[in-house]
Image (cartoon, rainbow, N blue to C red; front, top):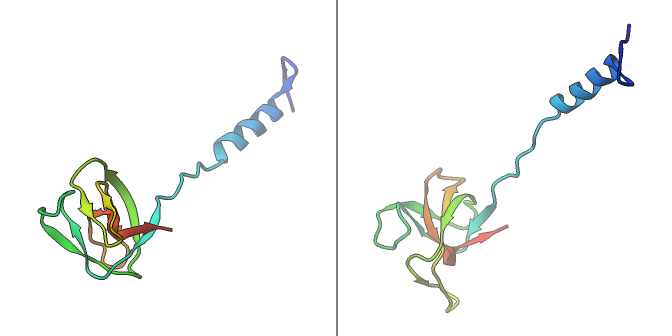
Length: 107
């Protein structure tokens, strides 16, 4: 049995509400990438003087978890200089830490 309220049936309203609340929200996946050199140091902080937690190599892959801009500048192998570090999770070793953007590439 349907009850009409202001031109909308209870059945139609419940159907609409069910559709709205059953839809799952899809969050964007975090950016993925890979290390561009062998033995890339994964640091505890965004500095070459911070302790090294582990290393990344091409093929390990990483998941980006955050970043920090305008910090220590690092000379890159291609001759450029970058002052951005990205906080990553090494997908193979599971080590997390900061890596200079000179040594990673997003897919």
